[in-house]
Image (cartoon, rainbow, N blue to C red; front, side, top):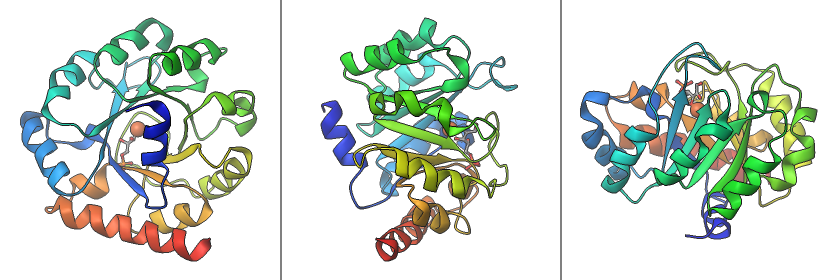
Length: 234
Ligand SMILES: O=C(CO)[C@@H](O)[C@H](O)COP(=O)(O)O
Ligand SMILES: [Fe+2]
């Protein structure tokens, strides 16, 4: 799939629910992937943490590469790591379709975004709650996706930061219509509709899927909530 086909697929009118694999059962990864696919998810969001950029450690490119052959779902890597330029090729080689680096981790993301694009990977920039949007403004036209963190990066299961709604609205007015606006952190049935109404069209969800017994119900209820809000707000 080319970058523009991927952008089109992920930026259609129907909301994208991307399960955050940080919250999955790592002892049963194969089964978790099968269940998520059966639940109707089209994307898996891989949270990579280095214990340096964020105070937590998760998994890296080797694990992603090993599970890549198990599914044709879109692989979306969220790199919460320092010096992403040193490791980016490992994630490209691992088969990620979309790779997002944090603006706080780089002095100028231009070369990374260009390299991702030239490698056929959708380039993304992530922004932490305390970082002002003006930090990403010069690079927005180089991004396929912009990921707004609505919790401090590093852990799943945190509460949604309410001021993110205003930030989504502002970011929406700054990006082109074909750029994906992804919201990540504390997204659940009681928060997703407001974020959709504000302009998010891609929703990363950890606890609100993995803490449920039935992933299919969780994914479809989240998509329905987001979809109804998107439809009524346009
Ligand atoms: O990037 C991150 C955390 O740093 C997220 O992707 C979380 O893992 C989402 O989990 P919930 O907040 O939905 O539980
Ligand atoms: Fe994430």
